[in-house]
Image 1 (cartoon, rainbow, N blue to C red):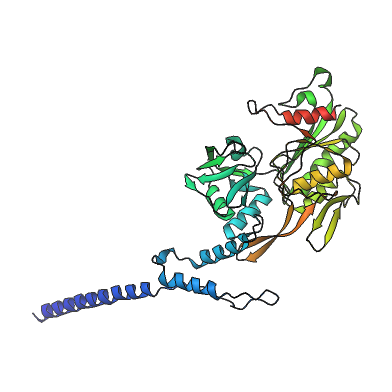
Image 2 (cartoon, helix red, strand yellow; image 1 turned 60 degrees about the vertical axis):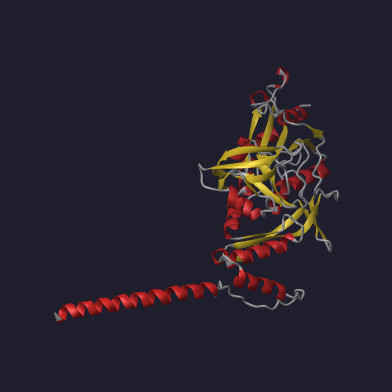
Length: 421
């Protein structure tokens, strides 16, 4: 009997303890929720020396108000708020190329320059609240699906992206191999007509340099007269200026240069910079130096206070070889530097369509913990002091691709024709 009483007593105590615990637990959760404040460590509220003294009190007041009064505390992510504040500050410069890259996006950018990533294969930029395609990379899902340089992306998977940062756009467009993304785009000069384009993501491997020497009759997708089919041209395709570009370029030139100089049937070089979104400035100088005598100007850096000329810095192997260059709307930045330098110095003909028109230079820096920043440090000018920003390089011979027969490369065909004259 005593044992049964003890069991009952213990049971009552357990129940009482449970209800007391439940009562205080619930009230403590409510109390903690009401007083919830995400923690972020502030190293200093004082601006570093040398920086303009700005009153940050409104910023901290807004931050505190959000923490105290915003109704859904689960949406408060201090790191995202900080990232957004930094991105907003940079957007006030009205410069689409000065951007803050959180860790994921910074890593994606580095992967792109390294030559491999998972996504659709398109270089993007942000301008006045719009996400614009600078260029689709060659032989990628984006290009095959019909994405074009200059396209304005208005939706991703049916969701409007107007006002998104480049970071948000990249984050939502990239994804695992084999998955689908639907981009709603407005092609240039189509009266704002929106088109849905389905793209299957893939591993994008960008080989920055490839080329060959061929009889023109053996080049696919062009037409030449029978009497010229046995003549030869050198074709070099440069898709970006990335981590491996200089090495890949050197390997190719070592393989081809001897034949280019000695085979009398080789009539010259076609340098294809179409859909090349750019990359490292030093690579642009290196590539241009292959065709210029040492000391010839390649590009002028202008940071408003000073002008600095970067010149051909090595003995190129193709300085006396006939050359034509292919460009289009997707040729931007470093590819425009090369094209502009060779036209100004050698009167090299540019063939195709007007280039993108990115006339500024960015400096990329890591900020720690995976994040990075790109800051515009100067504008660049061609050796003849032409600033292409917003205007692009206009071709000497304008040739558009035939939309009814995209396999017929009319631009490459014209380049071959010019070399064989």
